[in-house]
Length: 142
Image 1: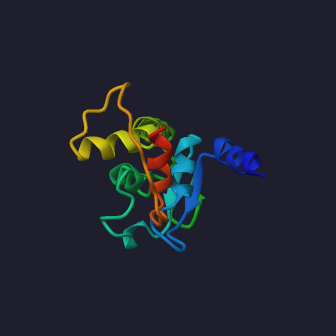
Image 2 (image 1 turned 90 degrees about the vertical axis):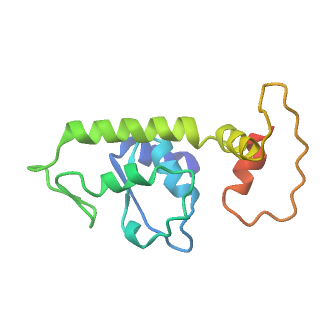
């Protein structure tokens, strides 16, 4: 089932997403990791503090692509394929360089003043992570 879910995003140009029960969700990153562009329906309602590891500027550009309507409709007479490909490429690059578990853990450690090298060893003890990025951080420490 998970493979089918990801395959659909891989074949899609866009992935519709909303805040649902929380603004930070794996779904947003999954959409980008599979090469689709997220159309964040209620993006303007999200907190500036939410989605800290995502490129909010690029996500906003998706909503301003010519021919893309926020109701998940694409007007093919106005759609600009070059701008779409450019945006999709930049989002995928951002995701691969900034949103992997390794990148999230390295960012957190650098923020704490830890010099991260291939020899850095960390012991992590977690007591009930409630933040959506906590499991990413812990996985990235491996």
